[in-house]
Length: 408
Image (tube, rainbow, N blue to C red):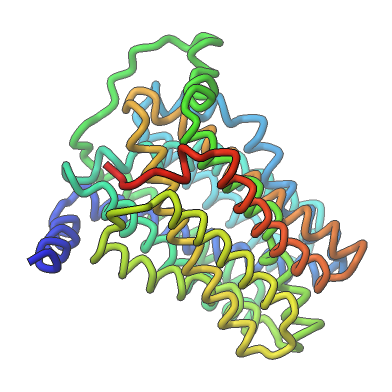
Protein backbone atom coordinates (compact mmCIF):
# COMPACT_ATOMS: atom_id res chain seq x y z
CA UNK A 1 0.00 0.00 0.00
CA UNK A 2 2.82 2.43 0.85
CA UNK A 3 4.50 1.68 -2.47
CA UNK A 4 1.26 2.36 -4.36
CA UNK A 5 0.90 5.71 -2.56
CA UNK A 6 4.44 6.76 -3.44
CA UNK A 7 3.94 5.76 -7.09
CA UNK A 8 0.66 7.69 -7.19
CA UNK A 9 2.35 10.75 -5.73
CA UNK A 10 5.08 10.70 -8.38
CA UNK A 11 2.52 10.23 -11.17
CA UNK A 12 0.43 13.12 -9.84
CA UNK A 13 3.33 15.47 -10.51
CA UNK A 14 3.27 14.62 -14.22
CA UNK A 15 -0.45 15.20 -14.44
CA UNK A 16 0.05 18.73 -13.13
CA UNK A 17 0.65 21.14 -16.04
CA UNK A 18 2.61 23.85 -14.13
CA UNK A 19 5.06 21.23 -12.88
CA UNK A 20 5.45 19.69 -16.36
CA UNK A 21 6.39 23.09 -17.82
CA UNK A 22 8.79 23.74 -14.94
CA UNK A 23 10.34 20.29 -15.40
CA UNK A 24 10.90 20.89 -19.13
CA UNK A 25 12.36 24.35 -18.60
CA UNK A 26 14.72 23.11 -15.92
CA UNK A 27 15.82 20.15 -18.04
CA UNK A 28 16.62 22.10 -21.22
CA UNK A 29 18.36 24.87 -19.28
CA UNK A 30 20.49 22.36 -17.38
CA UNK A 31 21.37 20.52 -20.58
CA UNK A 32 22.59 23.75 -22.17
CA UNK A 33 24.66 24.61 -19.11
CA UNK A 34 26.29 21.18 -18.97
CA UNK A 35 27.12 21.25 -22.68
CA UNK A 36 28.75 24.61 -22.07
CA UNK A 37 30.81 23.22 -19.19
CA UNK A 38 32.35 20.62 -21.51
CA UNK A 39 32.83 22.96 -24.49
CA UNK A 40 34.25 25.89 -22.52
CA UNK A 41 36.50 23.68 -20.38
CA UNK A 42 37.94 21.82 -23.34
CA UNK A 43 38.36 24.94 -25.48
CA UNK A 44 40.08 26.94 -22.73
CA UNK A 45 42.46 24.08 -21.89
CA UNK A 46 43.18 23.45 -25.59
CA UNK A 47 44.09 27.13 -26.03
CA UNK A 48 46.10 27.61 -22.83
CA UNK A 49 47.09 24.16 -21.45
CA UNK A 50 46.76 25.80 -18.02
CA UNK A 51 45.11 24.33 -14.92
CA UNK A 52 45.06 27.86 -13.50
CA UNK A 53 42.93 29.08 -16.41
CA UNK A 54 40.50 26.20 -15.85
CA UNK A 55 40.15 27.42 -12.28
CA UNK A 56 39.53 30.96 -13.54
CA UNK A 57 36.47 29.69 -15.45
CA UNK A 58 34.84 28.92 -12.10
CA UNK A 59 35.93 32.26 -10.64
CA UNK A 60 34.52 34.16 -13.64
CA UNK A 61 31.11 32.62 -12.96
CA UNK A 62 31.24 33.13 -9.21
CA UNK A 63 32.19 36.82 -9.00
CA UNK A 64 29.04 38.21 -10.69
CA UNK A 65 26.88 35.79 -8.70
CA UNK A 66 28.46 36.95 -5.44
CA UNK A 67 28.02 40.62 -6.31
CA UNK A 68 24.41 40.29 -7.47
CA UNK A 69 23.03 37.68 -5.08
CA UNK A 70 21.01 39.96 -2.82
CA UNK A 71 19.59 42.04 -5.66
CA UNK A 72 18.67 38.80 -7.45
CA UNK A 73 16.90 37.40 -4.39
CA UNK A 74 14.86 40.56 -3.94
CA UNK A 75 13.93 40.56 -7.64
CA UNK A 76 12.63 37.00 -7.25
CA UNK A 77 10.38 38.07 -4.38
CA UNK A 78 9.21 41.34 -5.93
CA UNK A 79 8.65 40.42 -9.60
CA UNK A 80 7.01 37.45 -11.27
CA UNK A 81 9.58 34.71 -10.97
CA UNK A 82 8.94 33.03 -14.28
CA UNK A 83 9.60 36.31 -16.11
CA UNK A 84 12.88 36.79 -14.23
CA UNK A 85 13.88 33.27 -15.23
CA UNK A 86 12.86 33.80 -18.86
CA UNK A 87 14.99 36.93 -19.25
CA UNK A 88 17.96 35.09 -17.77
CA UNK A 89 17.59 32.23 -20.24
CA UNK A 90 17.28 34.58 -23.21
CA UNK A 91 20.49 36.31 -22.06
CA UNK A 92 22.28 32.97 -21.80
CA UNK A 93 21.07 32.02 -25.30
CA UNK A 94 22.54 35.27 -26.67
CA UNK A 95 25.92 34.61 -24.97
CA UNK A 96 26.00 31.06 -26.38
CA UNK A 97 25.22 32.40 -29.86
CA UNK A 98 28.16 34.82 -29.44
CA UNK A 99 30.49 31.92 -28.65
CA UNK A 100 29.21 29.95 -31.64
CA UNK A 101 29.70 32.90 -33.97
CA UNK A 102 33.19 33.71 -32.67
CA UNK A 103 34.31 30.09 -32.87
CA UNK A 104 32.94 29.70 -36.40
CA UNK A 105 34.58 32.92 -37.61
CA UNK A 106 37.87 32.08 -35.90
CA UNK A 107 38.32 35.31 -33.94
CA UNK A 108 37.25 34.06 -30.49
CA UNK A 109 39.94 34.57 -27.84
CA UNK A 110 40.29 33.23 -24.31
CA UNK A 111 39.39 36.68 -22.96
CA UNK A 112 36.17 36.71 -24.95
CA UNK A 113 35.31 33.22 -23.69
CA UNK A 114 35.73 34.50 -20.14
CA UNK A 115 33.51 37.50 -20.95
CA UNK A 116 30.75 35.13 -22.08
CA UNK A 117 31.25 33.05 -18.91
CA UNK A 118 30.73 36.23 -16.85
CA UNK A 119 27.43 36.79 -18.67
CA UNK A 120 26.43 33.21 -17.80
CA UNK A 121 27.28 34.00 -14.18
CA UNK A 122 25.09 37.12 -14.16
CA UNK A 123 22.17 35.20 -15.65
CA UNK A 124 22.55 32.37 -13.15
CA UNK A 125 22.72 34.87 -10.28
CA UNK A 126 19.16 35.96 -11.07
CA UNK A 127 17.85 32.69 -12.50
CA UNK A 128 18.86 30.24 -9.76
CA UNK A 129 16.90 31.80 -6.85
CA UNK A 130 13.92 32.48 -9.12
CA UNK A 131 13.83 28.84 -10.22
CA UNK A 132 14.19 27.48 -6.68
CA UNK A 133 11.52 29.82 -5.31
CA UNK A 134 9.11 28.81 -8.09
CA UNK A 135 9.15 25.12 -7.19
CA UNK A 136 6.76 25.21 -4.20
CA UNK A 137 4.23 27.08 -6.35
CA UNK A 138 4.16 24.50 -9.15
CA UNK A 139 4.00 21.35 -7.00
CA UNK A 140 0.66 20.02 -5.69
CA UNK A 141 0.16 20.32 -1.95
CA UNK A 142 1.83 17.55 0.06
CA UNK A 143 4.25 16.46 -2.69
CA UNK A 144 7.13 18.86 -2.16
CA UNK A 145 9.84 16.32 -1.31
CA UNK A 146 8.90 14.24 -4.34
CA UNK A 147 8.72 17.38 -6.46
CA UNK A 148 12.21 18.34 -5.32
CA UNK A 149 13.53 14.87 -6.19
CA UNK A 150 11.86 14.80 -9.62
CA UNK A 151 12.99 18.36 -10.42
CA UNK A 152 16.49 17.33 -9.43
CA UNK A 153 16.04 14.37 -11.78
CA UNK A 154 15.40 16.76 -14.66
CA UNK A 155 18.70 18.42 -13.88
CA UNK A 156 20.51 15.12 -13.58
CA UNK A 157 19.02 13.65 -16.77
CA UNK A 158 20.18 16.74 -18.61
CA UNK A 159 23.56 16.44 -16.92
CA UNK A 160 23.88 12.95 -18.37
CA UNK A 161 22.86 13.94 -21.87
CA UNK A 162 24.46 17.39 -21.89
CA UNK A 163 28.12 16.46 -21.38
CA UNK A 164 27.89 13.46 -23.72
CA UNK A 165 26.20 15.50 -26.45
CA UNK A 166 28.55 18.42 -25.83
CA UNK A 167 31.65 16.23 -26.05
CA UNK A 168 30.59 14.50 -29.26
CA UNK A 169 29.37 17.78 -30.77
CA UNK A 170 32.69 19.47 -29.97
CA UNK A 171 34.52 16.57 -31.62
CA UNK A 172 32.49 17.24 -34.80
CA UNK A 173 33.06 20.99 -34.67
CA UNK A 174 33.55 23.39 -31.73
CA UNK A 175 30.72 25.55 -33.09
CA UNK A 176 28.02 22.90 -32.68
CA UNK A 177 27.71 22.72 -28.85
CA UNK A 178 27.40 26.48 -28.54
CA UNK A 179 24.70 26.64 -31.22
CA UNK A 180 22.77 23.83 -29.51
CA UNK A 181 23.05 25.63 -26.16
CA UNK A 182 21.42 28.73 -27.62
CA UNK A 183 18.50 26.66 -28.96
CA UNK A 184 18.01 24.80 -25.67
CA UNK A 185 17.91 28.01 -23.63
CA UNK A 186 15.29 29.46 -25.98
CA UNK A 187 13.17 26.30 -25.52
CA UNK A 188 13.57 26.56 -21.73
CA UNK A 189 12.41 30.17 -21.81
CA UNK A 190 9.30 29.22 -23.78
CA UNK A 191 8.48 26.36 -21.37
CA UNK A 192 8.77 28.64 -18.34
CA UNK A 193 6.57 31.22 -20.03
CA UNK A 194 3.79 28.62 -20.22
CA UNK A 195 3.70 28.12 -16.43
CA UNK A 196 0.55 29.20 -14.60
CA UNK A 197 1.45 29.41 -10.92
CA UNK A 198 -0.89 27.74 -8.41
CA UNK A 199 0.28 30.11 -5.68
CA UNK A 200 1.70 33.27 -7.32
CA UNK A 201 3.81 35.75 -5.38
CA UNK A 202 2.13 38.98 -4.30
CA UNK A 203 4.92 41.56 -3.79
CA UNK A 204 4.55 43.44 -0.51
CA UNK A 205 7.90 44.97 0.38
CA UNK A 206 9.46 47.96 -1.39
CA UNK A 207 13.11 47.62 -2.49
CA UNK A 208 14.70 48.92 0.75
CA UNK A 209 18.12 47.94 2.11
CA UNK A 210 16.44 46.05 4.94
CA UNK A 211 14.29 44.07 2.53
CA UNK A 212 17.28 43.42 0.28
CA UNK A 213 19.29 41.68 3.03
CA UNK A 214 16.36 40.13 4.91
CA UNK A 215 17.34 36.67 3.68
CA UNK A 216 20.68 36.86 5.49
CA UNK A 217 18.98 37.63 8.80
CA UNK A 218 16.51 34.82 8.33
CA UNK A 219 19.29 32.30 7.69
CA UNK A 220 21.31 33.48 10.71
CA UNK A 221 18.29 33.02 12.98
CA UNK A 222 17.70 29.44 11.81
CA UNK A 223 20.57 27.12 12.84
CA UNK A 224 19.30 24.20 10.73
CA UNK A 225 19.27 26.30 7.55
CA UNK A 226 22.63 27.90 8.36
CA UNK A 227 24.20 24.50 8.98
CA UNK A 228 22.66 23.06 5.82
CA UNK A 229 23.91 25.67 3.38
CA UNK A 230 27.31 26.13 5.05
CA UNK A 231 27.87 22.36 4.90
CA UNK A 232 27.36 22.52 1.15
CA UNK A 233 29.72 25.48 0.87
CA UNK A 234 32.71 23.91 2.59
CA UNK A 235 32.22 20.26 1.64
CA UNK A 236 31.80 20.87 -2.09
CA UNK A 237 34.31 23.73 -2.07
CA UNK A 238 36.96 21.21 -1.08
CA UNK A 239 35.58 18.43 -3.27
CA UNK A 240 35.47 20.31 -6.59
CA UNK A 241 37.32 17.64 -8.57
CA UNK A 242 35.06 18.04 -11.61
CA UNK A 243 37.00 21.18 -12.57
CA UNK A 244 39.99 18.90 -13.17
CA UNK A 245 38.16 16.57 -15.57
CA UNK A 246 39.75 18.07 -18.72
CA UNK A 247 43.18 17.38 -17.19
CA UNK A 248 42.20 13.84 -16.14
CA UNK A 249 40.66 13.13 -19.55
CA UNK A 250 43.59 14.41 -21.57
CA UNK A 251 46.71 13.83 -19.45
CA UNK A 252 45.91 11.06 -16.93
CA UNK A 253 43.24 8.82 -18.50
CA UNK A 254 44.42 9.63 -22.06
CA UNK A 255 41.05 10.07 -23.73
CA UNK A 256 39.50 12.78 -25.91
CA UNK A 257 36.47 15.12 -25.85
CA UNK A 258 34.13 12.12 -26.00
CA UNK A 259 35.80 10.70 -22.88
CA UNK A 260 35.44 14.03 -21.12
CA UNK A 261 31.75 13.96 -21.96
CA UNK A 262 31.37 10.52 -20.36
CA UNK A 263 33.33 11.60 -17.30
CA UNK A 264 31.12 14.67 -16.82
CA UNK A 265 28.01 12.57 -17.38
CA UNK A 266 28.91 9.76 -14.94
CA UNK A 267 27.95 11.69 -11.76
CA UNK A 268 24.60 12.51 -13.34
CA UNK A 269 23.89 8.84 -14.09
CA UNK A 270 24.34 8.04 -10.41
CA UNK A 271 22.30 11.09 -9.44
CA UNK A 272 19.46 10.20 -11.79
CA UNK A 273 19.16 6.64 -10.48
CA UNK A 274 19.16 7.95 -6.93
CA UNK A 275 16.52 10.51 -7.91
CA UNK A 276 14.25 7.75 -9.24
CA UNK A 277 14.65 5.91 -5.93
CA UNK A 278 13.89 9.03 -3.88
CA UNK A 279 10.87 9.85 -6.04
CA UNK A 280 9.43 6.41 -5.27
CA UNK A 281 10.49 6.17 -1.62
CA UNK A 282 10.75 9.40 0.34
CA UNK A 283 13.21 9.75 3.19
CA UNK A 284 11.06 9.40 6.30
CA UNK A 285 13.46 9.22 9.25
CA UNK A 286 16.89 10.43 10.39
CA UNK A 287 17.17 12.73 7.38
CA UNK A 288 19.79 14.95 9.08
CA UNK A 289 22.14 12.03 9.67
CA UNK A 290 21.48 10.72 6.14
CA UNK A 291 22.65 14.04 4.73
CA UNK A 292 25.95 13.90 6.64
CA UNK A 293 26.48 10.27 5.63
CA UNK A 294 25.92 11.20 1.99
CA UNK A 295 28.58 13.94 2.18
CA UNK A 296 31.08 11.50 3.70
CA UNK A 297 30.47 8.98 0.89
CA UNK A 298 30.89 11.83 -1.62
CA UNK A 299 34.30 12.69 -0.14
CA UNK A 300 35.51 9.08 -0.13
CA UNK A 301 34.44 8.59 -3.75
CA UNK A 302 36.34 11.79 -4.65
CA UNK A 303 39.51 10.26 -3.16
CA UNK A 304 39.02 7.10 -5.25
CA UNK A 305 38.56 9.19 -8.39
CA UNK A 306 41.67 11.21 -7.63
CA UNK A 307 43.83 8.11 -7.31
CA UNK A 308 42.36 6.19 -10.25
CA UNK A 309 44.30 5.63 -13.47
CA UNK A 310 41.64 3.33 -14.95
CA UNK A 311 38.88 4.95 -16.99
CA UNK A 312 36.19 2.52 -15.83
CA UNK A 313 37.06 2.94 -12.14
CA UNK A 314 36.99 6.71 -12.59
CA UNK A 315 33.49 6.45 -14.06
CA UNK A 316 32.34 4.31 -11.09
CA UNK A 317 33.77 6.78 -8.57
CA UNK A 318 32.06 9.69 -10.32
CA UNK A 319 28.82 7.66 -10.40
CA UNK A 320 28.96 7.22 -6.61
CA UNK A 321 29.76 10.91 -6.17
CA UNK A 322 26.63 11.84 -8.11
CA UNK A 323 24.36 9.41 -6.25
CA UNK A 324 25.53 10.50 -2.80
CA UNK A 325 25.38 14.18 -3.69
CA UNK A 326 21.75 13.79 -4.79
CA UNK A 327 20.72 12.50 -1.37
CA UNK A 328 22.35 15.54 0.20
CA UNK A 329 20.84 17.96 -2.36
CA UNK A 330 17.26 16.73 -1.94
CA UNK A 331 17.48 16.97 1.85
CA UNK A 332 19.16 20.39 1.78
CA UNK A 333 16.75 21.97 -0.69
CA UNK A 334 13.71 20.51 1.04
CA UNK A 335 14.87 21.72 4.46
CA UNK A 336 15.52 25.25 3.21
CA UNK A 337 12.30 25.64 1.21
CA UNK A 338 9.98 24.07 3.80
CA UNK A 339 11.40 26.22 6.60
CA UNK A 340 10.99 29.48 4.64
CA UNK A 341 7.80 31.55 4.16
CA UNK A 342 6.86 32.01 0.50
CA UNK A 343 7.32 35.78 0.62
CA UNK A 344 10.96 35.21 1.67
CA UNK A 345 11.82 32.26 -0.59
CA UNK A 346 13.52 34.33 -3.29
CA UNK A 347 15.88 36.05 -0.86
CA UNK A 348 16.62 32.92 1.16
CA UNK A 349 17.11 30.96 -2.06
CA UNK A 350 19.55 33.66 -3.18
CA UNK A 351 21.60 33.20 -0.01
CA UNK A 352 21.41 29.43 -0.45
CA UNK A 353 22.54 29.59 -4.06
CA UNK A 354 25.33 32.00 -3.17
CA UNK A 355 26.68 29.25 -0.93
CA UNK A 356 26.01 26.55 -3.54
CA UNK A 357 27.58 28.52 -6.36
CA UNK A 358 30.46 29.52 -4.11
CA UNK A 359 31.10 25.85 -3.38
CA UNK A 360 30.85 24.83 -7.04
CA UNK A 361 32.61 27.72 -8.75
CA UNK A 362 35.13 28.59 -6.03
CA UNK A 363 35.65 24.85 -5.67
CA UNK A 364 36.68 24.79 -9.32
CA UNK A 365 38.99 27.74 -8.71
CA UNK A 366 40.46 26.11 -5.58
CA UNK A 367 41.00 22.84 -7.46
CA UNK A 368 42.66 24.68 -10.34
CA UNK A 369 45.01 26.56 -8.02
CA UNK A 370 45.86 23.44 -6.02
CA UNK A 371 46.43 21.45 -9.22
CA UNK A 372 48.70 24.18 -10.56
CA UNK A 373 50.76 24.08 -7.35
CA UNK A 374 50.71 20.38 -6.42
CA UNK A 375 49.34 18.54 -9.45
CA UNK A 376 45.87 17.26 -10.34
CA UNK A 377 46.01 14.04 -8.30
CA UNK A 378 46.98 15.63 -4.95
CA UNK A 379 44.37 18.34 -5.53
CA UNK A 380 41.55 15.81 -6.01
CA UNK A 381 42.64 13.58 -3.11
CA UNK A 382 43.07 16.44 -0.63
CA UNK A 383 39.68 17.82 -1.66
CA UNK A 384 37.95 14.51 -0.97
CA UNK A 385 39.59 14.16 2.43
CA UNK A 386 38.57 17.73 3.22
CA UNK A 387 34.92 16.98 2.44
CA UNK A 388 34.91 14.09 4.91
CA UNK A 389 36.54 16.22 7.61
CA UNK A 390 33.99 19.02 7.12
CA UNK A 391 31.06 16.60 7.39
CA UNK A 392 32.38 15.14 10.65
CA UNK A 393 33.04 18.61 12.08
CA UNK A 394 29.59 19.95 11.10
CA UNK A 395 27.93 17.00 12.85
CA UNK A 396 29.35 18.36 16.09
CA UNK A 397 28.83 22.06 15.36
CA UNK A 398 25.18 21.71 14.28
CA UNK A 399 23.55 19.01 16.44
CA UNK A 400 20.10 20.45 15.62
CA UNK A 401 20.69 19.67 11.95
CA UNK A 402 22.16 16.24 12.70
CA UNK A 403 19.08 15.32 14.76
CA UNK A 404 16.46 16.34 12.17
CA UNK A 405 14.20 13.30 11.99
CA UNK A 406 11.97 13.93 8.96
CA UNK A 407 11.04 16.47 6.28
CA UNK A 408 7.62 17.97 6.93
